[in-house]
Amino acid sequence: MILLLASLFGLICYQYGDWKYWKTYYPTMLFLITGDFIYLYVAGSKPLWQYTSKLFPGTTTTLIVALIIYPCTVLLFLPSCSKLGVIKKLCHIMFWICLYALLEYLALKYNYMQHSNGWNFIDSVLFDCALFPLLLLHQKTPPVAWLLSCILGFGIAFLFKLPASY
Image (cartoon, rainbow, N blue to C red; front, side, top):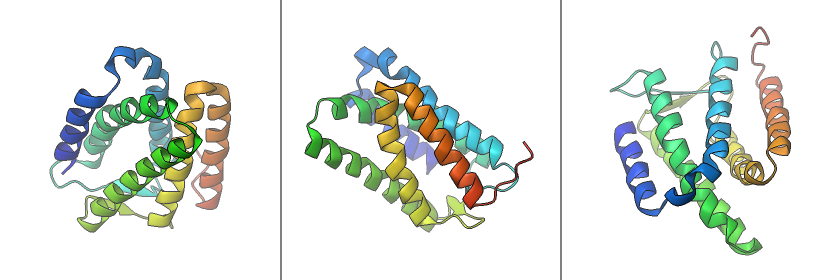
């Protein structure tokens, strides 16, 4: 499933992504990937969610998501969002939140992902509700996005009692 999803994201991104200005979005790609890798480090001994691919180990699946799906997401999400008015921008953000929620729902339903340690589907949707505005914010004012991401990360670590022995 992960190869199919990565291929689909790659094909759609190849067709519709803003490749001409990819360097403009590169810092935000790294922001998203770095956040994911920090989560893996912090929650390594007490994960809130894990990929359970039948074809690859979880680490390989995580790398496929981080190195293919996340950059494609940024190349598809940011360029079209920056050209929109407020109402259409909110609808665009909601589309991506719903898309990520649908993909996670399907991954959970077909056992390609599991939640643990108190995390659930609603938490994921709420996280996506913060994620996509943070990507927009990072594109305009990275320091503010980093600060808010740290606050969100510490909040999640506190709420879900992630171990502090990093």
